Image 1 (spheres, chains in turn purple, cyan):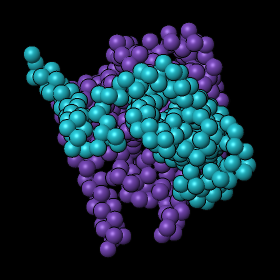
Image 2 (cartoon, rainbow over the protein chains, first blue to last red):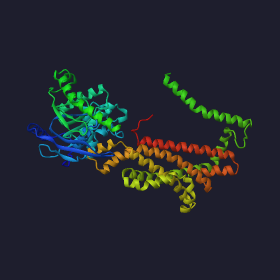
Image 3 (cartoon, each protein chain N blue to C red):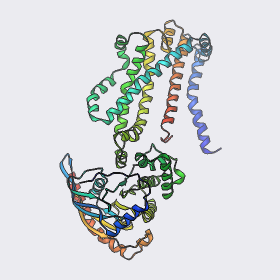
Image 4 (cartoon, rainbow over the protein chains, first blue to last red):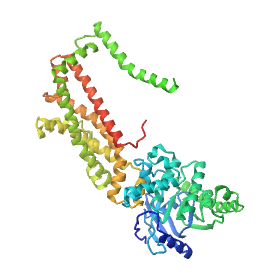
Length: 291
Length: 257
């Protein structure tokens, strides 16, 4: 069951709710509990299981990264968590320590920043839907644009920005409503490597400041190891959880410190060995379907 | 001078030289009577005809009458067209229900239904507005609909993720997202409106710029006819310019080339 999400006005939380969050982290009750979750789609060739029997708990305040071969249903899982899609089997519970449904906001892959709104209007989009007064909206937008280093561009339109800047806008827009849960769907997939590194560092920095619960989907092992507390490795379609890795690197992290850690290569090869089998299997079944 | 400016000057020169060369050749052939100056009067002689017609006042009247018809007919056709197009884009049952009619009527050359329109609305002003409105309506409907249908679905996901209801989804995503396609439709529609009004005035013979051209031809007032043609071209140009201006006002977010 997905509890109906009630979206509270997304302004910075009071100290009281921060305490709740802290208590929750201490009690380490999972914010997300996924059990035997499955999603079937009807296609021209019959029913297809995008994901099957997914079990996963995510603690409040955790940075959880999901990796898997392309087409393994990572995005489907994330969309179910976001409430954009329904599961067809299993259960999902989203409950915070106070017993309420956590709010979520998603950073989408690719084009998701509205081209018809200015940067500032994009960032305050969620607040506007929540009925936050104009003045508060623009203050909050300015605050977040400052956080992602786009203050100068608040009245620009997205087409005037680079792809990396647009993705920053998307991140700021998600953070603007101060969600309990931040869902990120390959947010840096369309970026060149250097821009991707910069944005990874930026998200790490922002996460250190906000300590939000994050579920982050990527196909990059490297990115997963840089960002995650835990890495969830998913199998090829139908996607299911193969193994969960704890990432030992200390925080706050930097790209260079993570890469120079002696365990980096070890963890990388362990994950890759696991994934290699899945990717090969996914390719074989795709080629089989084509012939 | 930078390479860019030089290139720009070269571009402008090329752009205006083609019509100028054409007019010069015409002028020369006409003056030397290689072509019959009665039917192909030298372009320079048209200026006198033009100023005379302006002084008499008839030209201004004709332009005013036709312009009002175009703008009013355009509004009567385009506004409901946008509304229906949005509805067809948003709700598939409406789309499936109306699509056969829309595509069938869209394909009819609109001037062909003028007799029908006259039967329905009489020979007065109403039929002229009706024929323009009808001739652009389906064009606007189909363009608006495809505008809604081609919006990237990820924008809809964003709105839903932020908890947008149906109404908010409409005015924060569907409508602004469809606006570029709506304007493409309006631009095409303007061309159609001009064609149809001139054709209609050819037939109805009472007033307007189309009547001016046809009557001048019938009375062999060839110079007047040319002035009429030039004025029609100018009207089209100015109306398009107006639409461009409106578009820039409504869509400040589009990249300009």
